Image (cartoon, rainbow, N blue to C red; front, top):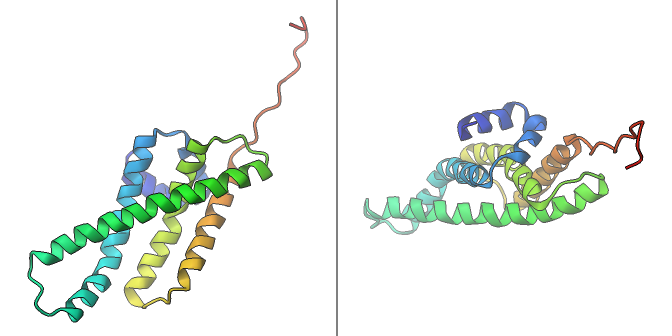
Length: 166
């Protein structure tokens, strides 16, 4: 499945995103870069506008460099945030008695940040949000991760077969 289809699936059916826990890690990393690009595109006009207002002598070469630097920073923040969220997700999975390893929870975490990122980025395009919204963003991400972990089916109990005990 392409990252565009994965993005649409995450937006339309976030509870079904638990199936992405089995995809290759490279696909998940590509998805994180794609998601951070969307966030950068939506958030960068405000950041670049602030840079221009502070320094009126910016050249046209500086703006693309600032955009690339901003994208790298946003991507780095996404990766760090997803790693921390996955660590919390391990604890949640144990509480919910779900048998998930760190890689699966990391993939779930990468998909769990889709809605919060999209909502925050779109709202930020129209309104300047206070810094306290970062806490709401984290809680929203955590809520989405718990929902995704909760939808993962519990492991099947070993069945007793009639016949040999071996």
